[in-house]
Length: 407
Image 1 (cartoon, helix red, strand yellow):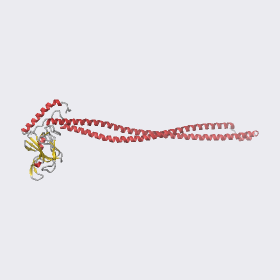
Image 2 (cartoon, one colour; image 1 turned 135 degrees about the vertical axis):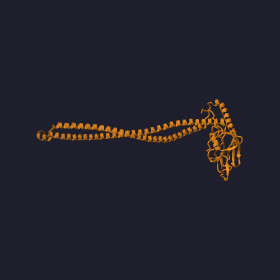
Image 3 (cartoon, helix red, strand yellow; image 1 turned 135 degrees about the horizontal axis):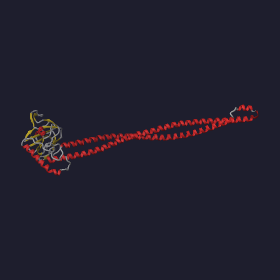
Image 4 (cartoon, helix red, strand yellow; image 1 turned 30 degrees about the vertical axis):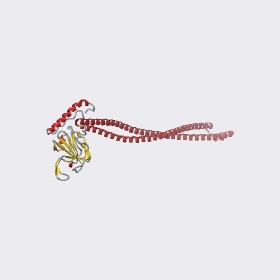
């Protein structure tokens, strides 16, 4: 298949010649009383198979895009969820950071207090040590009571020394006690410092872990969403391309039909220029049968296609409408002459359902009417008739020979 506009001008003359030759061969075949041979497809134009393939490709791409849109919608929900989770974790992180900062200040204060207390305790311990050393030096290491009793000439001096030593001892005890207490305080503060440091480390780790979890979840969701958006853009591009391709294929196909079979040609048309006259199933075949209304044995002149009320009826082949109106037991009826000894009839058309007029030229697949149940009928259907050389013929094998399956 070539794109629209390519080789159209060059091929116009050859296609016209081919069309004339094809029409002549069909007319000759009917004149000789044989079924027409299948004509070669018109050059440069796509076939009905090409049209259907383009439609399938477009439908598949649209289905993929629909699936992607559904996935994107789900991914957006996940992005929103993880974003909310990231924000919640971010708030926790901020709260943890605040607690960390506060704990840092507490820990630093405890460190300062511990250092000051240790310094004071060290000072007190040094002072106590010095006093004890001085006291020992003044006492000479002897017994003050023994010295006092043995020195009768110097009793007042010993008494003075005893009083002085008592005061020194009392002061020394106080200094010592204070040194011990200060050391206990310093030790307690040091232990508290260790605990506060542990709290600080725990808060730091908790804050960091929460932040990393939230950040990873949000990044993962966003990456998946972004990937789906890329795939969506590609799918949209593919759909646009295939839609355009399908439109061009259909337009070229219809153009080929019109050039070969007339301006009204449409839908699926076989290579020999025939189309299915209506959808539905065969509810009654061609030939002798018992009439469904009166029960008498009668010849059924065509084939009934039942697909419902009001469904489209198409011209089976290119030709001229020679009758369009009421036709007795057939109800509303259309007859088309195809110019080669063959004509087709379409009966039981719905009231107001005739869409063509006498003398009108129609193409294969052209919409001409809609099914009904007018005339001698028990339900909506198309009674399709084929006359070949003015003789009734079974439409099923006839149409099969033209590349069209009725049932």
